[in-house]
Amino acid sequence: MTTNARPIPVPDPESQLYWDAAARHALELPYCDACTRYVFPPRPTCTRCLGALRWVAVSGRGTVYSFAVMHESYMRGFDPPYLVAQIELDEQPGLRLTTNLIDCEPGDARIGMRVEVAFEDRGEDVAVPQFRPVSDGGA
Ligand SMILES: [Zn+2]
Image (cartoon, rainbow, N blue to C red; front, side, top):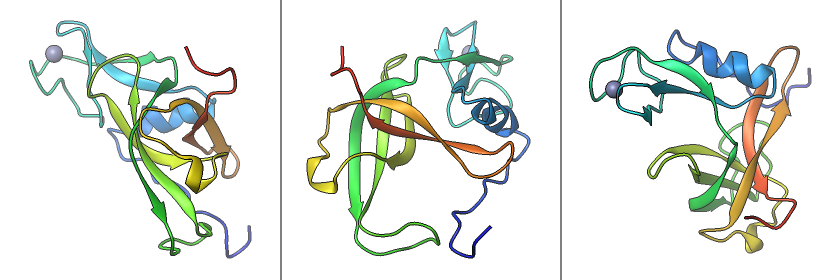
């Protein structure tokens, strides 16, 4: 590993299953069957009914809700300019992940653009979900 390698995520008990799924290149989020809604960021129980959550695979598709072009490096391994974005997933209004938008020139990023998850491997059994413009034009 070089000194310029991007940081490795450190799971906590609530996010462990998120990172376990990511390592398999799957995007899974906690879901409450009683409320029929996703709860993210992960919590021990549903934030609405305090019921149990189970982890469910999601489509990995969504739209750019907001983004910023970073012109300085705030973290090792991230060479400016790069994009930080909030992605609203198709599964549920308001279900958003903060991520990097990759494979996209900073000047081409747009709010509302269609994106899909892509996994960046950062070592053995570690991958980070990120998002890129959809390769098939959306839908
Ligand atoms: Zn609930």
